[in-house]
Length: 314
Ligand code: AKB
Image (cartoon, rainbow, N blue to C red; front, side):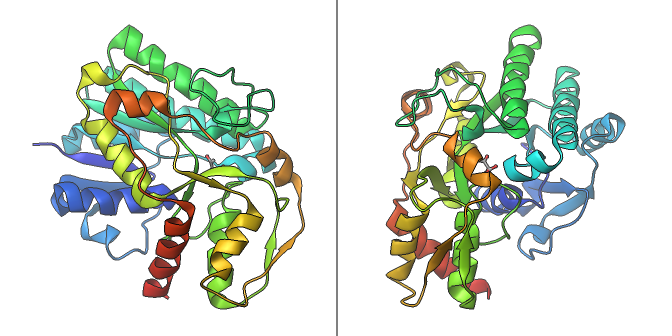
């Protein structure tokens, strides 16, 4: 029987992934782990294990005792937070990944998922429909750690046969957790401000378009990639993935259709420079060809679902 361990389960993506897996595989087929337990009552229907992913002995023991077939290793310091503390960001992102890859090499798990990001791209990549194989020259420590992580993933696959699969996520938008230190997280915050009727001050320029995706699409993509037959996975660094794309002013317009007094004020800070170094939109032909990826959420649908989701929990 398959048993799935999510490491970093209390973060933005972890919470959504656990719930998606509970629906697809059952509550007892999924185990959450993190250094702190999430408050989400749905997530907490599955077992929780306290785990520091930077401690290889603790990771090894958890995998040995749990009998897990699949590990989703989501631990990361995101782009904006990473720029405030580059060495801590690098240490966390790389050490935790290498710990999991080493344990997979020892045969303690059959499949590993690890998220990469559009942050692998830098200012010299084409902005529109950026392709899978575009040169990567990231300017953030987060982006540098993602490029290095992608190459490590490929290395462990080619040298040790570790079946590690990965997606370059765009900005992920979901209602179950607060923004988590990413540059794209302005968009998540906008929805909270729209509902609590507080002024929304955006740290990006009004026209700074970025690739984005609703969490439901991201979770479906992740599980579909993990279920795809091994011979179909041709990219062993990480797959480009596209959902929708919008700028802060376009997001403002869409939210305004539902919340008539919503208004954004623009005060760009250091995060604008990060956003400006990333693509506006992504070409995900390889994911479409290799494992049949298709996004379901347009910007309009994303906004509608996000507002509905938030209203249901407030
Ligand atoms: C961030 O903004 O740092 C993340 C990402 C694009 O990986 N959401």
